[in-house]
Image (cartoon, rainbow, N blue to C red; front, side, top):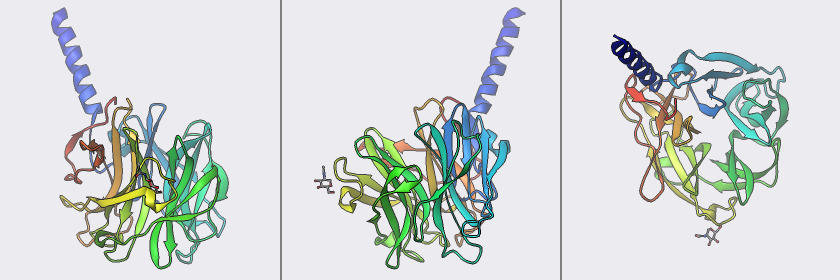
Length: 323
Ligand SMILES: *[C@@H]1O[C@H](CO)[C@@H](O)[C@H](O)[C@H]1NC(C)=O
């Protein structure tokens, strides 16, 4: 009797463990664009583009994000940055959390700039406005870290008529140094609809440093992930120090235009995961109907990432290790 009771208890524990560690996509069905996840202090913190404000959802499992605790952490009345609020990302620098995001005016997208808010010791603390990082058009800012070179800000900028990637040293969390164009969209898979490189996301593995980014116009099904691989020794602000490859995550299984991703670690730190958006619109789309998907990053024998393919929505997947 005691044995049966123990058995029943462990089966129950086993099944609740299994359900905690599994999930299905999408994690966010509506306004799931430009997702970014940070894992910290026992929670996943998810941010996506809402166009009007900055919201954070948190939960202890990926599946839990669907019904997680949610709060609006920023709404701005300043006309220069009230509107078209995009691509928020949480980054931890010098003991505090910061939100890097894009915003501009209500009139059009010409005023889009990268901005940063300063928070506290956890992502759930309150945020206040810190600064605007550029004086010209820029979107999708992120942080790129090197132990030997320090921190850089990387974002999407214009180089002539080409929407490209720019890089500058991050001299403090709210300020950048001299800007350089890091890479321009010239490959056939980067120029469908419009030449575009945007949504950069740093990736580190086995001593290697990568920058994933999104290529081609987001209103096409060719929107996809590309990759820049650092050569391990050259000045990170020089294009010659990076090698381009792609496309590495493309439309599949009813998910179109996968891209604008972020990377996060599993709770036990053993795995890297990719969070990105896609649309079910078979023409491709750049609107609020894009949903948030997550999947593990696997590694090829040469040390480069394997992003796999976007799986069919609703499939039960094993969650990140340590949930
Ligand atoms: C890395 O790139 C730089 C150019 O920025 C070059 O001078 C250097 O030789 C390269 N190193 C390797 C290991 O390829």
